[in-house]
Length: 172
Image (cartoon, rainbow, N blue to C red):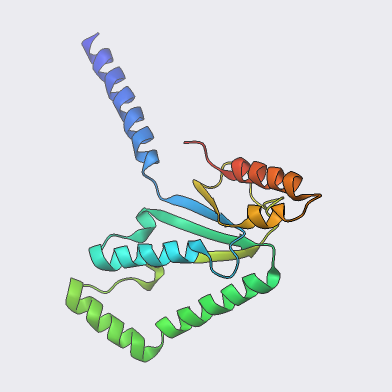
């Protein structure tokens, strides 16, 4: 009987540990209506600064940032800017300088694949192209205000957008 009780307690504790561990898994973030100055990009930059300052891997905190906007033009510009920044950061002269600085500071070279990327997609906030429960955080910085400028459809559009944001939000 004692052995069964100990085994049961061990299983319960293991289950609790798994539940607690899942609360601390990296999070996925969606920014709806990012426009040409996405918060998601600022968040990524802050996380990479944290990584630089502390050595903590930003991907242990957040492993997915998606910025979406209705405007294909805006998303294409954001993608072009991201590609240009990536190309600039891996140019041979910068790569050598970065590698030397990183090696001197930490004794090891950071793996470039460990960088946190931002995905930019064209999407209508009223019909998000994601399944239920996919993001831990959904941000919006002005889309609802912009929608409310439409006297006839503003409120119904906003209700739809908020419903979509709630649908893709993971319940913790």
